[in-house]
Length: 441
Image (cartoon, rainbow, N blue to C red; front, side):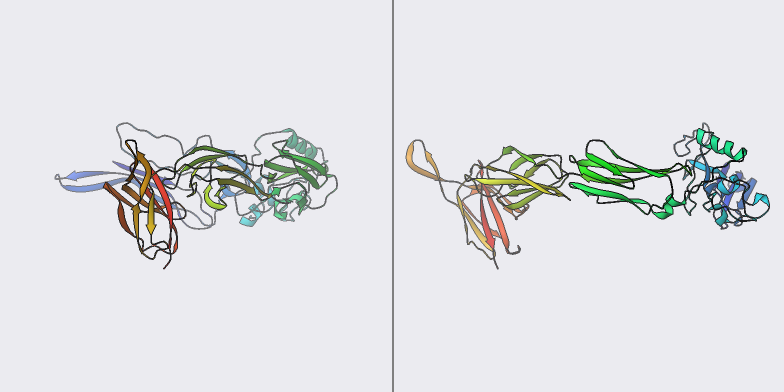
């Protein structure tokens, strides 16, 4: 037995499949001939003249069940049930129906259902409303349903005034979203700046209340449709302007995200420094509340851009000398830096690179070390090369060679590299040493 049922929402002005219902069973005749019998096979298409009422602005009702997360199970049967619900609520009373536009005596178009209705400017006959006072949500091509499915103090007073013949005729058009009302001012507050409301229409008895959340990051001095903000500390706040009108019972709140303050002076911590080796020798951290990225410099050269407070960076190619480590943090208001000095120990073999500058193949050879034999104070030894690396200026390893038995000299072909400064690193089975070579063709 096979069953298939599909239901789709009313489409907007087109003919499309809206319902499918099929129940059938298949049996075998003579054991190998399949015959399918349909108990029902029904297909219904939508009428393009029927408007999709659940889509228009009006009274929003939440669905009692979240269809997207509902679990369907069955025992003794196999089925595939798929439910797609684009919204968790639907409009059960469109605005035009709630206001009884046309009083049922004239056909309403799609435009009538998407119109913004204001009691101060009522629609004319035959599409007029029997009500005197009303304000609806802004009608547009996008769904803008609102919940008005319960009696509150505000709509209760509205009904009372309507029945007593003393309706309050609201006109909130001066603060409609179509005016694009917004808070005008910079997104970064560095010191003190004036913010003001833009595109707000004029109406008597209109007040504006300014707030910022969280509190303490900025100081607000309100002044009607504008406010002066002063940065107290680094942080992000939401500036809100709550607009209200006591005469027409209108209210609106607009917001703006603002970053406050200059970046604080960072602190640097060097957690560890390794001997001169493989190009990522320094473990560091920055202490700051400033936003990323953090720029790390060694001897004035940018070596790393970090997006976390911890980083492992190339500490430079100089050992047993004083190096300068600097970090810089910045935002729209400016930049701040901190620096410290350090020395990196030298380990590993002594070696020479020739020619330098080079055009292609270089020769890397170890020299006699300064480590003297304890039994013969004048005897010197020559280290062997067990591993060799070539690094670019950003510390990336672009070539690596291993010598399992160790050698005292080797040739390395760098002819495929572009003109630049490179670092040669040599490991003698004890430590690493680095030298720089210039490729100049």
